[in-house]
Length: 117
Length: 115
Image (tube, rainbow over all chains, first blue to last red; front, side):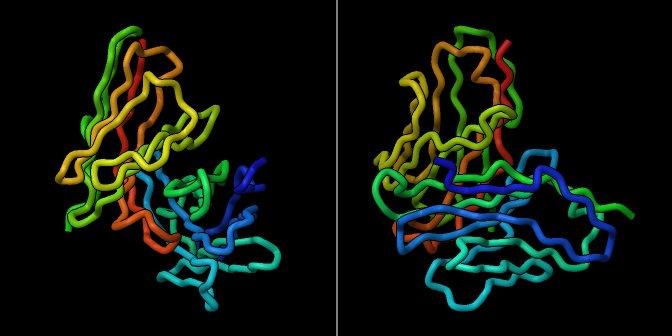
């Protein structure tokens, strides 16, 4: 069963506009963490933002914010004021704390974001 | 503060050979995990080490192994390489894998090509 679902294989956005990348997840754990990473073509996985399952406020990191809707099991990434350098693959990931999931991240399939000038 | 360092960045090996990849975590981080990324399978968890102990392992054959040293540096080894082992291998470090709250940082990855 897929635990992280990113339904948008590719997204396009105009420079300086905002864009939302979707992520839904599935877990029976009460304690879990949700991550977003950016992966440019060089391969490095760059940490963007983290949201804990018990965090009441949505996480924000500069131009990145995470729209966390726990009841709907969604953790969408919002990038404001897109820049050309934001063009990359974006991954949503979850870390659970129970059973065989201990200590590992489960990733979605990724969304390729292209920012147009 | 130095990030996660992986070596080598690129390597080409022949089928049947073995390869060792190295990862130095962020200073003070004791948890190191490894992931394989391929176009077909995406990102898959290989194993996680904490204080020199493997605490979790993904669904990979025994040809894939790893270890962690007392200074938290980690190595992974793939023996009897197959063409399908061609992938980007990513190392990640975090202060402590306990709980969901520790941020996990990745290195630049090691690109392995098996010919």
